[in-house]
Image (cartoon, rainbow, N blue to C red; front, side, top):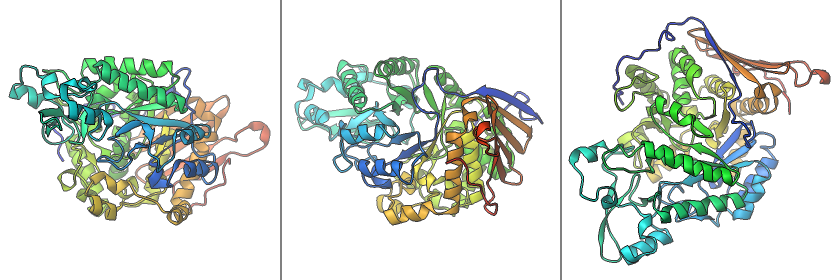
Length: 533
C-alpha cells in the first residue's frame, strides 16, 4: 500500500525538541453525553441480546461505560454488510429484542445508534415496491439512479472523478421485477442502494428514523457514510460543499429532538478539521495509526504534531467494527501532505502484517471481499503482536487525549484475530468481529491486560481532573506527557516510547477523604493498585 504525496512539512514541529499545548475538555457547550468511556459493540456478538447487555452493564461492566454505541441492531442484523444494510431501519431485529429494550438500556447509559443515511437494503419494503411498480411506485423518488445524477450522460472524466472507497464504479445494472432495467447507484455493495437524501421521500425516510430514535431514548446518532450522501455531476460526489449543508440540516433536526450528532468520515486530516467546526462530534481516526507508528518507530514526532492541531470535539477510538484507517494519515487526493510520510505509512502497514503473522494481510485489500482500499483489517491487539505493554500504552494515550473515548468490544477483551470467521465468510472485517461465548467472555475478563485496562477506564471515568484542562507536552521526540488539572485535582500520563512504558499518576479523588494519590503502570510485571471503584 503506497501513499503518494509531496514531502511532509511540519512547520518546524518535526524538529522541535520541546513543545506544549493547553486545551480544555473537548465537549460541546451544553453537551448531553457523559464525559466517560463508551463501549462500541454488536449486541449479538458480545452477549446475545439487549436484555443481556443491560444486565452486563449492571454486573461485570458496572461503572465502566457512560455510553454504549449499539452497532446496527435493526432488521436484519445479518444482511450483506453486518447490519449496515437494513431492510427496516425502524425495527429492532427480534432476535435482539425491541425498542422497549433499547429504552431500558438508555436508562443505564447514553445510547448511540447508527443513522445509515446513504443507503438502504434491496430487501426493504420501499425498494421492493419500487422494483415491482417502477416509476409509479410511491418510493420511486427515494432511490438514486445513474440518470438522476447524469441526466444527459457522463464523460469518462466525470466518472473517474467519483471518489471510491472500493474498486470499480458505484453502479449496479439491475433488472427490476417490473421488467425494467435500471442502473442503480450503489456506493458499497449491490444489496445497498443509495438514497436520494434531497428528495422529499428520502427526507421523510430519514426523519422517521430520527423520530423512532428519540422515542427509544437514543441520545446520540452516528451518521454512517454521510460523506457519500450527496451526488452531483462534475464533482467527486464525496464531501462536496452540498454535503456540509446536508449534514448541518440533519444535525439541526437531531438537535430539535434532543440528540447529538457524530460524523463518520475517513479522509485527509484537513477535511476532518473543517468538518469538526460544524458538528457536535467527529471521530479522531488519525489517532490509531499515529499511536501505532509511535510504538513501532519508538518516537512520537508525528503524534505530537497531531495532538497540537487536532479538533477538540473528538470521539477517540483505537479500533472499531471497521479496519484500522490509513487514509486518515495519508496524503490528500490533490497531493496535500499527510500526517505521515509515504514510506512511514508503508512501514506501518507492513509492520502490522508482520506482527500479526500475516493474518492481517489475508483480511486486507484484494485478499478479502467487502474490502476497503484504505484500511488494514486486524484487531488492535494483534496489530501490536499481542504486546500487552504496548497495548496498554496505546489505551492510556487514547484515554488522556481530549475527547470522549470509545472502546470496541473486541478491544476491551484484548481479542485476537478470528481467522475461522474470516475463512467462513471471506469478509475481511470479520477478522475483528468475533462472536463471544459466555465462558469465553468470563475468561477474557480475568486476563491481566483486560483487568489493567478496566482499572484505567475507572480512573478515566471517575477522576474529576478530566473535566478540566489538559496540557500536552513532548519534552523530546520519544516522550509524551499529558496532564489534566481541575480545581486542585490532577492526573498525569508519562509515556516513554523508546522504552515502551507508560505511567499514570493521580491525586486523591477528594482531599477531604484522606486517600493518597495513585499510580498505574503499563508494564505487566508491575502490580497495579486498586483505584477508585
